[in-house]
Length: 423
Image (cartoon, rainbow, N blue to C red; front, side, top):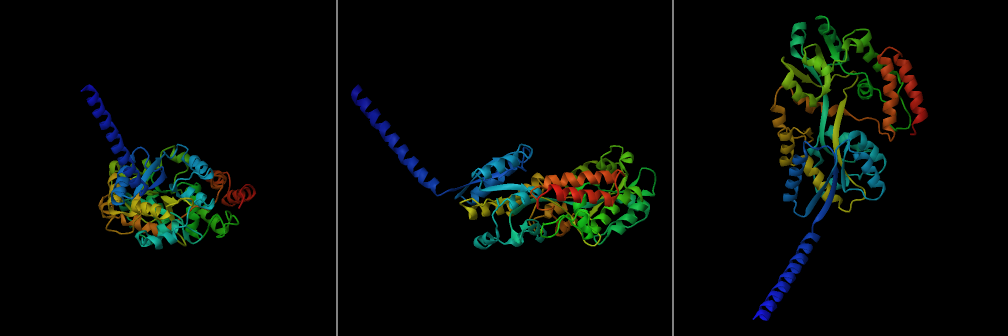
């Protein structure tokens, strides 16, 4: 009896193992039909990791044949060094997230795949994204990434100070002169009241020169144009607001006070800053405030701070990767998750999808954020972008502090950039 029982147990175990083997084989067969995509990303960080996971879960539920492996790192956790190393070592992820500055560098290295043909193959309509956003991710007339999220810079203004000065609120058709005249009227209201503020540094300069028909490089990227007449005129305009018109404080007058605090304290009429400041202003500002598209001179131009996702040139599944990236950027359910988390702004052009964002006031005129996208400009496409930033910024700071004239500062920056940076 005992021997028979042992025999039954052994047979049962064999059957169970066999069944398990058959199940495993069946599972492996099913898994073999699933495409796995590795997605390197940084922008979710710790605060939006759950939102990112929820967006991926939505995608996998709607695309059961595609599995996403998230390879997440924080922005400061050597993400860029790791990505460069992996690509150079032949271990590139199928898709990877980039900010705009690094998007240009990785595109120049040949790491990103052109996407125009994938729009055709998948039938995904590129018009779901605003034209300004598509321009931001074009290189050599080809779309090189899917815009995922963005922030822009707008003109934020204190309505109380405008009312006290008896002047009209900013309009979308304002030019530099209009903003300067308003700044003079507001500054005349009293001591330590300032008409305007945007810092004199590289990130403002490369944008503002484009409002005046200038640029830092020729269109073909073969020469620097840092000290062009338009650029010298632009820097002089920026300096004059401090040293001639005194509608913007110099460093001594600012006394280490952040410009955001100046605005919240009711001492600043106009502030050029990003849409990320809205939540803080809603919590701290005790006066009505509004926004408008940033004024230009001969043209409008504004910052596009965006995160984009690229398809690796080496991926074996370009269509699946492309489908995933567009889902994350434009699927209504994914967009809603981003909006609910206040994790930057989605890149879709459909106003109805942005309705929740646009109706969340103040400010009332949030459509200015959308309108500003058509004027977005990119930093120079340059592998040694960091060196250019340091070279120009050093000279701008010397001009800001009155050590160099506008012409001297840009002449020196031009000479050093031409000597140190290979084009």
